[in-house]
Image: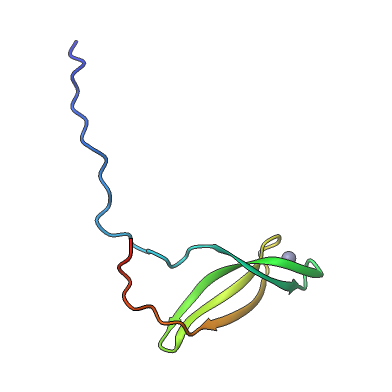
Length: 82
Ligand SMILES: [Zn+2]
């Protein structure tokens, strides 16, 4: 029996389909959640990329209820960062 099987190296996909979108990101912000009836840590989630900025939705870190949205006006120069 030949134990000399050739395994190809791990292949990285050439391009990630979504580099930084659809990525749940914990924010330091705390917002009031109507369901939890208290200020809760929120998760920031990219909703839309608009010409004037990126629209984010804030979701409760406990029950995932939507607790608000905001538009981030920071401009990204080029999306090509690893
Ligand atoms: Zn909640």
